[in-house]
Image (tube, rainbow, N blue to C red; front, side, top):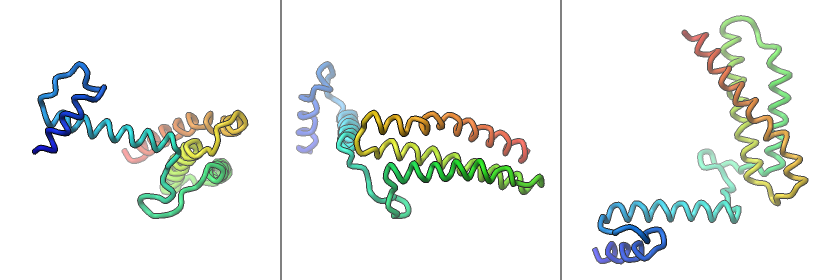
Length: 154
C-alpha cells in the first residue's frame, strides 16, 4: 500500500497532473502506465531500437533496401501473373485472394522500409517516394478485391 501512495505522490508531482486533483488511485495508475508506455515506444522509435526478429515466427526482419526489393518483386509479380488467372469461379476466387494478399504484403513491406531507413536524407526520400505514392493504389486494390469477393460469395 505504501508503494501506491508513493506512486500517487510521484504522479501528482509530474507535469501531466498540474491542474488535476489526484484522488482516484486506479485512474492515476492507469494514466501512469499509459504515459510510461508512450514514452518507451517514443524512445524506441527515436533511437531506432526496433526489433530484429519477428514476434510470431522468429525470422529476421528485412532491412530497408531488402524490403523495397521485395516490394518491387511483388509489384512485378502482381502485374505479370494476374492476366493469367482463369475465368472459372474457383480461379477468380483464388486470383482475388492472391491480389488481396500481395497488396497487403506490399503495404507492410513499404511501411517496414520507411521505418528502417538508416539515415533520412533527401536522396533516400526521393528513392522511396514512388513506393509511398503506390500505397493508395494498393489500398484501392484491396477495397476493390473485397467488394468482388463479397459479390462472388453472396
